[in-house]
Length: 292
Image (cartoon, rainbow, N blue to C red; front, side, top):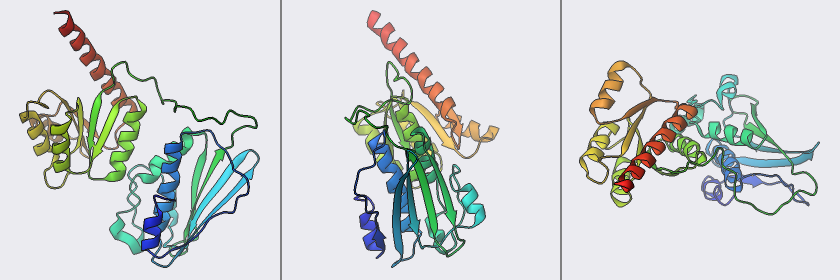
């Protein structure tokens, strides 16, 4: 709620929260669960006209927690409901075209909910009749150890984690990609502009840069050339992330200095395998240098 309250107040929404007398406990990653609920509340506020109403319902049934985030906003068509959790879903929500569709925030939410053993769904009475997002999470078993622990990584951490910078002006896209990379145990930062990325690269050079091509101000091609021209980043691995995968597109990224070319949406397993190879190569190179 702390993350979303400023937007709710700015839009003059009424917010109703459930009255829960006893805590309902789940086992999970607190940071990621905050991300899930903040995203759902943010969407509800964003797609509800000023002065609207948001309300959250919660109940425990058969060992599961049911949470519904409701709004009386612009609603969704059946087609949009069907694709709401798809990666890069960009369907138009009539009264709020400027928001650019749902982006991939809900794809992040769906994946995180599933990683917690839960499910999520969407419903709406139709355009202008509000929306409801309902997620179900398994409750912690009675007597479970409720002490906080370090989060479990999605996979074994690499022996030599890479320093990685993701650059994409689409905040949801950058977040999704960074989440995947962090789950592999690498150190990842994100920037949403080329200028900020260059500044970051000078202050703290990374091992790998994943660059969106369609960046404002300085596009991905020019950004790659600047990174190659700078001694501190000249030997970094540059990975192009773009919506185009034709031969001429790959030739263009290669000419700009990129080492690899990924087409959106990026296949998480392919990227993980590539990063593992890069880490192994750098580890072997460092070992060979130390033996000289």
